[in-house]
Structures are given as structure tokens and as C-alpha cells.
Image (cartoon, rainbow, N blue to C red):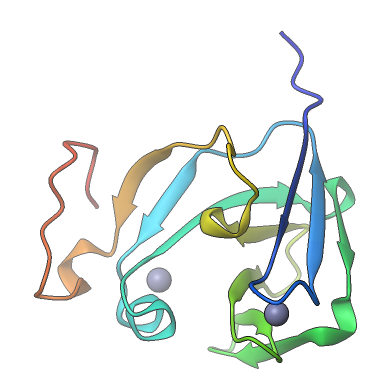
Amino acid sequence: MPDDQIRTGRCNCGAVRFRTRGPLREVVACHCSQCRRQTGLYYAATNVADDHVEVEGAEAISWYQASETARRGFCATCGSALFWKQRDATHVSILAGAFDQPSGLRIARHIFCADKGDFYDIVDGLPQV
Ligand SMILES: [Zn+2]
Ligand SMILES: [Zn+2]
């Protein structure tokens, strides 16, 4: 079945809104220390081709250059974490929690589990890297 579904989402204050078209990658939960600090927990994000996402209020996004190769976009007003973008990539990661519900998204696996916070356990039985 072709997935031409439109999904929408936004930051907490609504200054940044986005709309995706078509299939989205399954959600990957990243437990690395950067994602832990940015979110207070872990980063659960899908991924979409640049030409399948429209962003409204892009001027409200603040981009933090988190490493030489990646930057993290968040709403400069309300602080909601929204995007993760790798240099030269034609895809952008979008936080699963920013999507309007129901999102139809599912977590598929966990990555950087060795760096996860010590205050929770991963107990969903999904693959851990
Ligand atoms: Zn906002
Ligand atoms: Zn991470």
C-alpha cells in the first residue's frame, strides 16, 4: 500500500510547524550523551527526505552545531527539540514526539545504549546497539 500520508507536527509554542509527506523511517532512539543532555532522556526520531518535509516558521529554529558533522534544531522560543541534520545530508531527522498524534510511528531500535542515563532501563525488547 503506497504511503502518501501527510503528517503534521509542531513545537510546544507553535512558532515552528512542519508537514511531512510519504513514508517515514521507523523511529530510532538514541541514548548518546548529547541526546541525553538535549532532551533530558533520549532522542527518538524518524527521518525524512528534505523534499518531503515543509517547515513553517523556519526562522524561529535555532541550530546548534553539535559536532563537525551534525547540527540540532530547536525552537528558539520554547526550546522544543525538533530536528537533527547531518552535514550534506538530503534527509533530516525529526523528533517523533513533535508529531501530532496519532503519529503512526514506532520505535524500532535503540542506539548508543552504552551511553544511556543510569536512571532508566530499556525494557521493550527491541534491538539495542
Ligand atoms: Zn516553539
Ligand atoms: Zn544521540
